[in-house]
Image 1 (cartoon, rainbow, N blue to C red):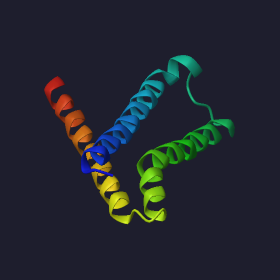
Image 2: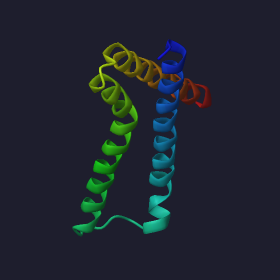
Image 3: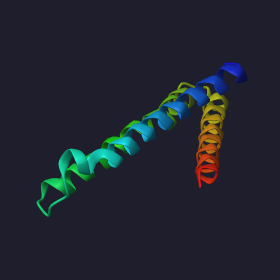
Length: 105
């Protein structure tokens, strides 16, 4: 694979993580109005832990899935490069998010 293709895949995967985090943050922002205050029943921590496991699965798949597949298929350099490009893209999105936070202050 060419580097430009790997960069596109890395940005796409990082953007997928960004969109998922945005949707999750929106959910957390609205959760009190939808569900009310959390009580001390067992279901609340169960739901939170299930969301944690699902989030780890989804983001792990987006960040690590394709690089691991490439690595195991013998395209080791491409797999490592894709992981690097995804990490750089995530860092850029994180920096932009913090920049927006500072501007909105």
